[in-house]
Image (cartoon, rainbow, N blue to C red):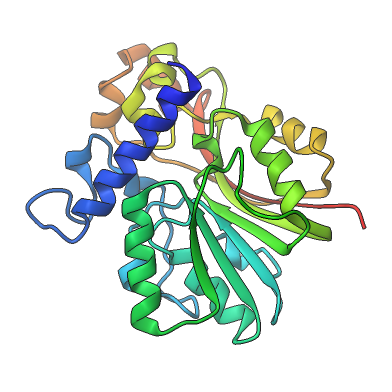
Amino acid sequence: MKPEELKLVVRDKYSQIASQSGNTSCCGPSYDCCGVDYTIFSENYTLLKGYNPDADLRLGCGTPTEFAGIQEDQHVLDLGSGAGNDCFVARAIVGEKGRVIGLDFSAEMLVKAKNNAQKLDFQNIEFVEGDIEDMPLASNQFDVVISNCVLNLVPDKTKAFSEIKRVLKPGGHFCVSDVVIKGQLPEQLQSDAEMYAGCVSGAIQMEDYLNIIRSAGFEKITVHKQRTIDIPQDTLKKSLSDKEIKGFQDGSTGIISITISGWTVI
């Protein structure tokens, strides 16, 4: 599939999730009717200050705000903000004088996020429609950029990290949770559009991911956390042979959630 076609797959899938969340006749808490159970990647947010259950669609693969070092009064950008889950947690940290912007390209997700912010009467959170590879945002305006299981869905990750560097202030940093792979992911899994939208097939080798970050000019790159994703047998059987499934089970091939940060040069 061409990059633009993949973007449409991702947009359509997450727009579908946004429209159906809360509808018990379809996706319910695991979204399994949408083709992939995305919640196998998610972590528990309920104990984090600022947590808003209405904004938690369980589509992340980590908790980047825990490792981002966000400070009071800072300006924070959340890429692929969805219904606003990480934005509300970040807002609890930056306080009344800080600012949080969520960027997403799904109109349906943006509607949910804006409704959630309106219910809480927050004046310093804004949700913007846009593409991570070409952000409609001015340069040098954010102290911290966060993202949760989104950048692996972006076809051109080099452009994505270049844009992150552009919008960060000198001395600013990013902290993202994302999905990378270990070993050689079977071709069928890599080309499966449903699995792409579910965070798997968009993933690349961890070292390739780190090299993209280095090439973008970031320094002090730190991997804070790694976690192997346990893919259900039923999901694997849709794309893999018994031999390939065994590779997942013996650890020679795997899908890993990482939380990683990097800093711009002052």
